[in-house]
Amino acid sequence: MSTIAQQFGMTEALEILGIKAVNEGTSTGGQWFSGGELIESYSPVDGQLIAKVKASTEADYEKVMQSATEAFKTFRLMPAPKRGEIVRQFGEKLRQYKEPLGKLVSYEMGKSYQEGLGEVQEMIDICDFAVGLSRQLHGLTMHSERPSHRMYEQYHPLGVVGIISAFNFPVAVWSWNTALAWICGDVCVWKPSEKTPLCGIACQNIIAEVLRENNLPEGISCLINGDYKIGQLLNRDTRVPLVSATGSTRMGKIVAQEVAARLGRSLLELGGNNAIIVTPDADIKMTVIGAVFGAVGTAGQRCTSTRRLIIHESIYDKVKDAIVAAYGQLRIGNPLDQNNHVGPLIDTHAVELYNKALAQVVAEGGKILVEGGVLTGAGYESGCYVKPAIAEAKNDFAIVQHETFAPVLYLLKYSGDVTEAIEIQNGVAQGLSSAIMTNNLREAEAFLSAAGSDCGIANVNIGTSGAEIGGAFGGEKETGGGRESGSDAWKVYMRRQTNTINYSTSLPLAQGIKFDL
Image 1 (cartoon, rainbow, N blue to C red):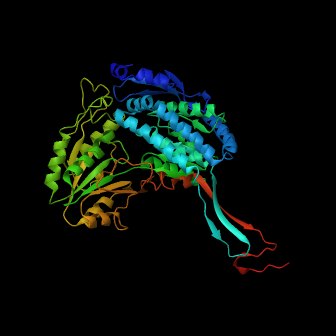
Image 2: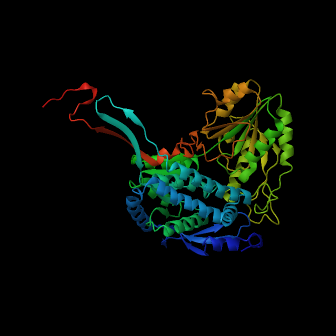
Image 3: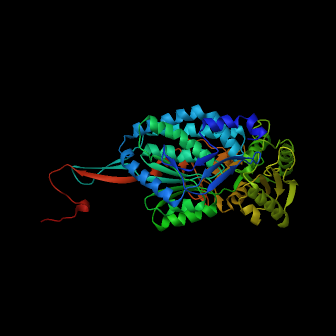
């Protein structure tokens, strides 16, 4: 363990979370097993090997699926409020393990410790939300056209829910799905990112405690590890009625096609190319705070990160100068040190994509305002630390149309009214998050109208990143159309059934049809 990790107490955190030097990567709850090759998890913070995980094999996967399908037979019959009690206990465990789990998220993924703690808090919040929801899985009652008949709708559990998560939120997105799926009566099989496998093992250890303490069967919470090939087993398995996948648009299109080929359901949370519109009536100070955090938070590796700043020409120079000045104050380094603003990218491959993006924007005619580059020397040994960069560009540049998962911000100019700015904002293939900075009520309402932002998330006077669990999270177009977390997102984890009950002594047919025998 490196000096940085030792100073941060990572040895103790790993021990508390049950992480060993070599870990089995497959679990059905309390049982751990794996027969596959080793996955090595290196920290982008210092480049050091944290631990190894044995990948799941196809035989391991089959064992998991047998356990999950068997557990579903029992779990679906448990009353929803009692399932909610299990989720409540899980939330209490997360409160107990918040500090070590937050440290692991920060160290394995590279986000700041505060963001790591915040991610665990999201898990706690969705558990709280799900507990209340367990008593509110409402159907509808409607009047029948036939006398002495009653009609209603009810929701039943789907079965095994497959979850494929990304490295940037290695624990929170899993919990968004599982907390809701569990209170709905589903069981879950999770494939975490192969870039952050230890976070998955830690979470599985925590929920296993709850399942064991409540004498619940193996299979309610399952874990598999590996590359895309193990994920394909979920996508193609008819025993998995729903696959929830978070990642790139490219990956999502593959998942969608494979799941649709067997007429399964998919919940997709894919790429974002998020913009903030800055109108002449914007609060500049507020704009700078929202834009800078949105662009450099998590080193630009959030699906909701701010990629584009669309600024009216009348205030363009003023906003540009303020943003550039703010970037000059950023501190880049060890994310475990709370004095730093920006940590590393996830790996050197992400660094390559960052470098290519900066080269391409210049090749297309853009102008670099804040120089990027890879940081080297003491404290940057992992090779994953880069400088947040700003470039002037146009919306039709190929690189601007593309989502670069790195701290690269493009400044775009508009000259007309807010309608023009909205057209620019909507003029990309992705449709996740958007924002407008304005104190003009008409501009704000235009942005939120049916002719306004085409994104799943549209904010006024806050940035594009940072979402509360109470609202449904997701986006349109190439973002996939899925919705997770709050509101009525629970419905995707259930199947709807319409019931008609005849309590008369005759059998009248619908639409007045006569069929006398």
